[in-house]
Image 1 (cartoon, rainbow, N blue to C red):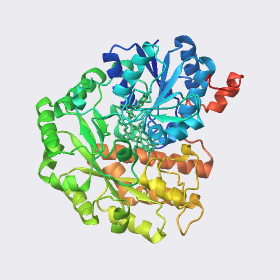
Image 2 (cartoon, rainbow, N blue to C red; image 1 turned 90 degrees about the vertical axis):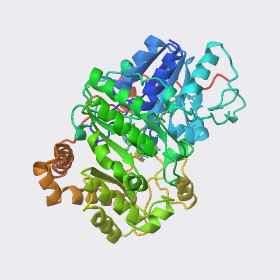
Image 3 (cartoon, protein in one colour; image 1 turned 60 degrees about the vertical axis):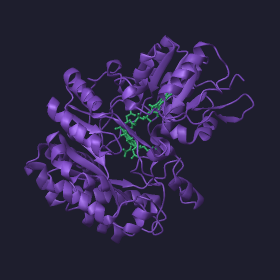
Length: 500
Ligand code: B12
């Protein structure tokens, strides 16, 4: 086998209790398949015995090249462990890793995990195609392939240079859903119902918020698929996989007005009855107020907006380029047009007080249907990370805790980071246990909202029972840590030393 694309075993997040295939992997696999490469894609998170099954797959396939994908910083150790396991079983297999985290700190990643041979920095399709072609030709020098990072035989870090981005995303084929087990019971988003799914129709964002790894990774550029291609994909997902409710991962769905107008026309024409939740930003909601009824009629039921904070100085500090007034106005517009509002918000700022947190809660409560509260996290590769590192505020280096829920930095008033994590839990409870929200759980006329709130109430109730009665939390039945796997395997990994 020429290429085995692997999404390594991950721990599913308690809030989600479900999983979705990586849109990046599905797109990459489809492109490489179209280019004639022989490949397989395995997503270990939905395998019965993830690490054991990965080991068996490597033994069976012995791929020439294994590609490991990592969408979040939080998952990076899974990728490193998978690389160690692969080299242990099949030392000749070349390992290439892709995704935002290793792309943004390639040298650190390569030095921390010498089993990784190459990092595909940035967009994956063309770089991986050229790389596989070079491997096929048995080339040993890869320095002519843009977008690659590696350590050469002298121990020097090499980056071959930026790969130009694909200008027209419509030239890419349909994601390779046919290579995936779309009916696995974990697949979906339980808060949105059984037949839900995650899709991605755009890359990047034209803005430059200092905390965002997305704008860093995609060089502050936005590119999107056309409304026709979006509708084709949604139609396929309905016809072939019976998927009806979607979270659209695009950072800004209505980045251009033309795309919004085209989408509304196309969806009305096709009349698939599918429902979508999209992301945008306040300024674009205001710009497109006249399109909001059209969006609703075309199936959009919720807009997620990065409101972030109720204080203008915090918005300015992050270069958000929105004002508190535009944020408020956008939420009012969405409500007026019968659309649900999901606000993403951040606490854990250095100068924050308990009073600020209560003020934030008070500010958004009248508008939001979904309280998307996060803890500010310095993702590597961002300006915010560099700044926090310089100020010595990052107290947790363990990337597996960078999940936007656990705090990794203290505030001036709370030197213990756990206090910030606790504040997050307490605010979530305060929002969802409020009589108004509990009322919606049973009596809201909006079935999606009812379902959604019930899901979150269920999670809160499980956590409450766990704390009071000691009953177990939700369990990902197939999950096993790498250490548990190694113990069960009974054979430690050989110490890897690069053949050079
Ligand atoms: C899909 C997604 C998920 C999926 C992940 C599915 C999976 N199998 O990995 C789900 C819903 C499970 C998820 C969960 C989480 N996510 Co998430 N998620 C996204 C989302 C919406 C889309 C990513 C995407 O599809 N991008 C588009 C594709 C085309 O890009 P790509 O993946 O980078 O792939 C390209 C290249 O990287 C490269 N490439 C990728 N893989 C490989 C492999 C090889 C071998 C090669 C050569 C190249 C290559 O080629 C691809 C095509 O060009 C982003 C937000 C966004 N809009 O981007 C957040 C995002 C990635 N998630 C984020 C986070 C933090 C999380 C969570 C950890 C926490 C949270 N609060 O949400 C959870 C934890 C999950 C858990 N433990 O269960 C952050 C990550 C920040 C960071 N730097 O770490 C993001 C950026 C959102 C944000 N708030 O900023 N997430």
